[in-house]
Length: 466
Image (cartoon, rainbow, N blue to C red; front, side, top):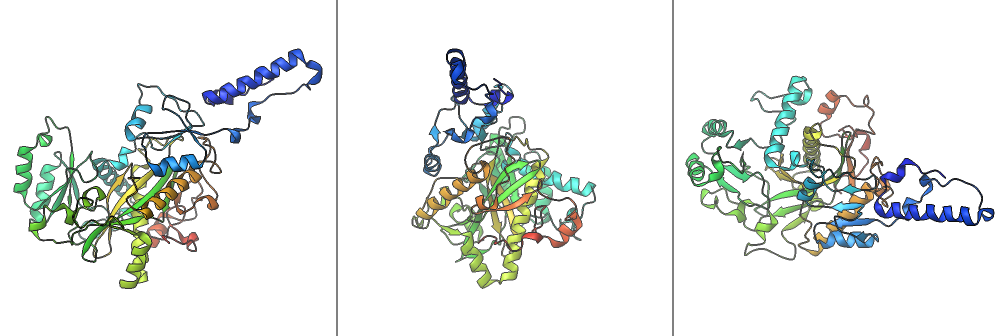
């Protein structure tokens, strides 16, 4: 009788079942030796697929629970033997804390990376992208090319941004170069539009800093980012909108990411105006659903949302197919390089996966701008179509993250068959890439033609965003 080392990686319930089988085998050998052939009991032969998956969930969202129940999973508490944990960011911080000493088993996966905030916290995202640019400059990479005005040719996808209070003097210097510009202030650690406001005068910022204890570096508890406002956004029906794009990352080293075709646009319910009298009207400037739901004009039937596919068809009809394809390629490009900017600092734990919510604004010149990345994109359905889309999103995520879409295994490389991708497309898969297939120079020259290394030259037949 042989027990392999795999026994110690199983959960409590699995261990109990295996122990029971061993005891039964021992009793049979002792009391009925003539009726049993001698053999080997190897835990490797234990059928894991027959095990029922247990899950723990920190949020009571129907799109999550219905997916888990549809798969026949059993709900358990956080202290029980769970296989899949859909957790809050606070729970992840506690699980991976050095103080807790918690170690995940091979049959456990969780929906956040330990330091996801390197990408999802506003100030850290900006710092990491700036660092990534500097590193490429030191390497003399073609990606770091700049134009005659000192702007990045290939990596200019975030607005000019400063972190306050640390970068206050640099911000003032930049503001005075163009004193008629508008800037947007956002607290780094908040979401859903909380604490955001616009300024177009330095006196407004100074007045706010006097009234706010958060701006005092000696007692600072909350940092802010201040970014040049995209004051000429693309408008549809006279209204401002942004895009919510879902991106699933299963590994940062090697980088493996999938982009979801069924994203959506979020519209303001009040027509856009650049008039300074509307500077404080958040119904004009902020697309967050939590804010727009409070508008008198809010439509609960469509929720102020439009599918990405509808946007693409609209732009092809009004601007042309070529420039529309370039826009969507540029969005894939900025998502790819935002992920690469944090790949070296992210703890790429094999038990983790993460679905990020990218917020992108398109300028009137069809230039996409990365605004922020959300670690916990809202799963609350505001419309019937929203509910269907988000249920499919969760289902597709687990079809990719679970081997054959069935049982979690941290040992699996999360490289599913194309039939399991659902509405996801492969954005990048460094593990499956041949290093010699696409040089960096060719990648930059083709900018937008992404393959598994970042250029899609070999996958042009694959429908994108459809």
